[in-house]
Amino acid sequence: MSDISDITYPAILPANDLSDEVGDNVVQTFQLESNALRGRCVRMGDVLDEVLNAHDYPPVVAQLVAETMTLTVLLASMLKYDGIFTLQTKGDGPISMLVADMKSNGDLRGCAAFDVERLEALVSVEGDDIALSKALGTGYMAFTVDQEQGERYQGIVDLAGESLIDCAQHYFNQSEQINTGVKMVVGKRDGVWRAGGLMIQELPDEGGKDAHDIDDDAWTRAIAFLESASDDEMLDADLDANALLHRLYHEEGVRVFEPLNLQHKCRCDEERVRNVLSSMSEEDMHDIAVDGMIEMRCEFCSHVYRFNPDDLQSL
Ligand SMILES: [Zn+2]
Image 1 (cartoon, rainbow, N blue to C red):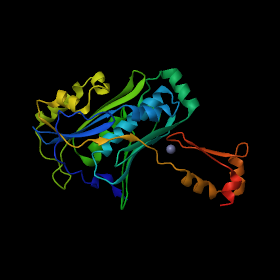
Image 2: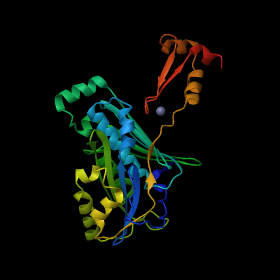
Image 3: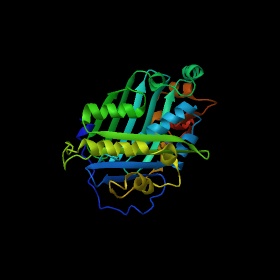
């Protein structure tokens, strides 16, 4: 397995018109003209809402799954890959796992694993605004790229800081040594889950990982503009990515490229579930059967697959 920081960055494509509207559920690639900074802007609406509505997560879990998915889109779209990018946290806290993955075509999904009793106990003391270290505990955040053909890449960093962004920042400081600024906001607007994300990074030299030298003022200014985006601007369904980028960065000169559309799509399928079950012993199959049927629910999309153990054995 190779280090994920060895993956090259995507080539910059021909520029699009900033005045074109790019719609919702999209990740927009951009570059600032005045300095060698490139970025990504994410706007998500019903893609995120569908994922969270397939579950009945407590608010703190729903919030973290939304953040995990947004961070996944930001990080995945920074990499050049053909396959699946996965972001996963594992820890000893009440929320033992957060996971989201994105195919290079924009198919996105996410879910969480948590201990209901431990989480309820924590929420009863802390309220819904729980420190990340208490919710996730001690553990790690892993980034994995499974290429359609070829190698598997991974990067791992300890869970640290107050937010998932802090963990990702920690990784960039430690492993990539590329200045990275990230902002994301998730929340409900008109009863629908929405997310907005912004990320800027120093642009590495062609084919390499070394960032161009950029002056500190340019970096500070770019981060200040990023931070200046309000929660309402980040979540506004009527403010598309290009309009937001224009509002934030028009003084710097902003160039936009081909956006990638995001869609909620799970990769589970009946055949795969059937194969897993078929490899079990007859006894184990009957142990997990309820009223003579085995039910398997996909953790990501909540789709329920039902099988008769006798049919599985006859395969
Ligand atoms: Zn599924």
